[in-house]
Length: 246
Image (tube, rainbow, N blue to C red; front, side, top):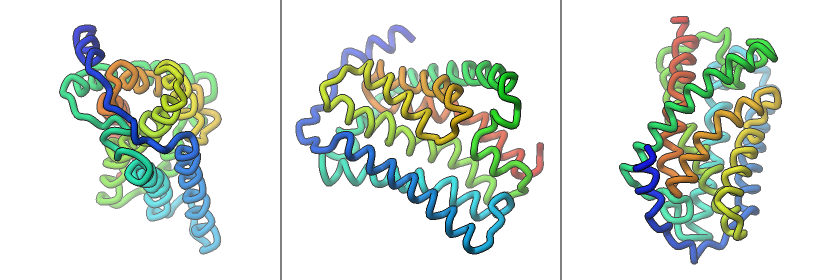
C-alpha cells in the first residue's frame, strides 16, 4: 500500500484556475439537502402518511435529498468552475481504486469495532443509523429493497463524496488552507452533516479512512471506492432486514 500511495502522491493535481465557487456553494448544497428533507417530511405528515411504515416515504425521504444536493454540487462546478472532473477531482486512476479498496476494508474493520464499542455505550437502538431506523419493522417489496441496497452501497457514497470530499474539500483548498485542514474539517462536517447527534462520534471514525483516501491520492476516486466498500455490509444487512430475511 505504501508503494501505491507514493505513486499517486507524485502525480500533479489538475489546475483550478477557473474555479469561482467556495464555501457559499457548499452551504447552498447543504441547504438544498436540509430543505428537501424537511419538505418531504412535511408533505408526508400533512397527507397523513405513517412515516414509519410507508415504503414510498422511506425510499423518497432517504434518497432524494442527497441525490438532489449532489446534483446541485455538480451543476455549480459546471456553471461557476471547470466542471466536476477538475473541480471535484474525479480523475480516474487504477492506483486510486487499489488505495480505495485497501482503505475501504480497513474502514470496515474500524467501523465494526467502533460500532460494537458504541453500542455498549449508547445501546443498540441508539447506535442504529437513520436509514436503519426507518427500515426497522418495515417489510419492503423486493424491488424497493434492492433499490435501497443500491442507494446505500453505491449511489449514496458517490453523492456524499461529491459533496464533502469534493465540493467542501475544494472550497477549503480555495482558501489556501492545507490538505490536512481539508481532511480534518471535511471529516468533522461529514459526521455532523448526517444530522444524527448520537452517532456523530461513530461517523467520525467511519469518515477517517475515506478522508485519508482523498488526502493521499488527491483525487475523489479512492474515497468513493472506500466509501462503497465501507457501506457494503450495512447495505446488505438492510437488504436482508427489509425483505424479512433477517
